[in-house]
Length: 139
Image (cartoon, rainbow, N blue to C red; front, side, top):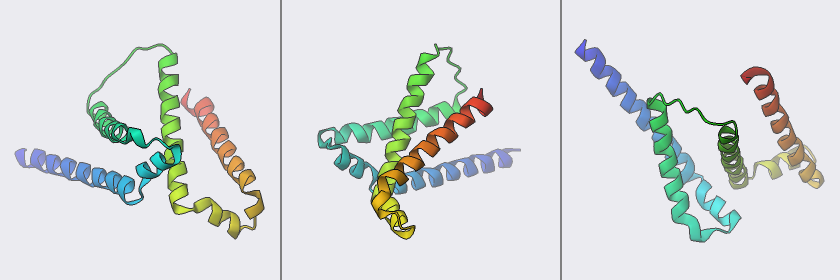
């Protein structure tokens, strides 16, 4: 019984370390946060970015382990979701900017003169897919 508990603790800690290391490597190696700072021209807030990522990761970990049930008005989750959407969108934009995905894709499919249309099609498709999922599956 004790050995089973110790093995579960070991696996949990090891899994957490692997996921945390992957997250840090993602942010560090690809230079996502410095690129976000550079694109948004907010060099004065670099410490705020660092603190936000750290506090967000710790708060997310806390919420994963604690069964917190908040009874809030409808506007709070909408506001919270908007922040999540902005963060994920900026993260995805920085990632594609770093990797030059869209210019390469546009060149491969012969749409380098229509890059804006390609980007708008991707964005509107993502919005439509997200709304479809939330309206029909999450209710």
